[in-house]
Length: 319
Image: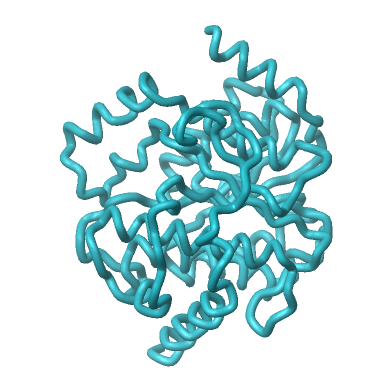
């Protein structure tokens, strides 16, 4: 109860988002569900972009019970399938008049070894990074960013990026190397590099966002979500069952972790030179605060974009 009061007090200090519309990918559970709940509490309309529509419908119902006047829309979105991403982007073009922001939250952790995306990429990198990159390209292609030149794009990173040095980016994106934890860390490092480069608003031939669009990133520290217990997870079932409870006791809940997302959406002035991370010891848990980008995220941006385009071109060529 005390935690909930603190969360409500924190949210009460932020700007109302009434009349604004945000996409949240992976909105049916974990961090995405909590972010959606907070956005509803601030009056926003949330577009839930979810892979499993049955689970998403249940999540939507539970959110409406909490906020009977809340406005929610639900669209199918599978970040491991370029065709699904393209269909989603077209649906946004046709059904959402003005978009105020996007929360790029969807992702996976520790899937069973050898699994691939629909287009044949390693599942972790293909979903966590290439799926996000392809979504941004699709939204750009359908002129979504022109609907509101002042929108905010929020990337969800990971504490794991502090331990990764990416040497050969092309291999990192298209070849399954290292153990599953390393693959996850590399995918989130790529997300961090992409966010940083796009936030510089440097014109290039691949993916450019006007300087009026704010590109921001947060990482949630360590929190108890169901990402460990996903259907494709390689984790033993007993670990998947106890992990969320254990993490919520010893770290912080998704409701607290998601406040970093809301801070970036509902704060009047934002700084693209900073990211948001938990304020606690080693950035593991705690309420959000601004931090400097780690050095390794500020490198290799142009190479990353060029290589991402090459990966997509290879896939297109195989069709």
